[in-house]
Length: 99
Image (cartoon, rainbow, N blue to C red; front, side, top):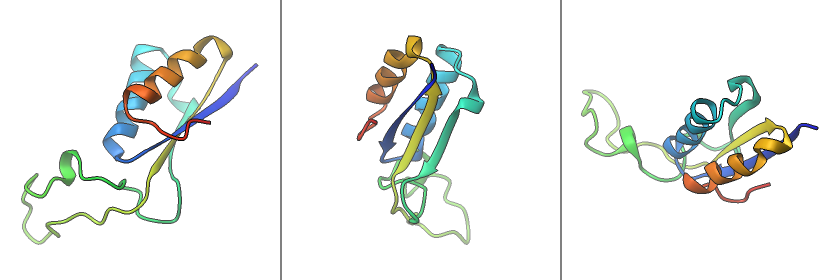
């Protein structure tokens, strides 16, 4: 029977790495995975990471500091056989508030 598991992440990179791991390493259908903002705040995450770094890209005419505010939730609809692998991927990439 399918079940939905979810965890919250501080950075978009952590959320995306989790999804990449689940789809590429464990064969979970990408259509069964969602990344959504936890609240109505900016969905880039709450911590600077990857291209959010102050000097990353140095694009003319852009803000030097990203507008970071909201956490991201990754939810996965999966069967019981893969539940432990989903939970392990959440933990590996810093997922919190696992449901």
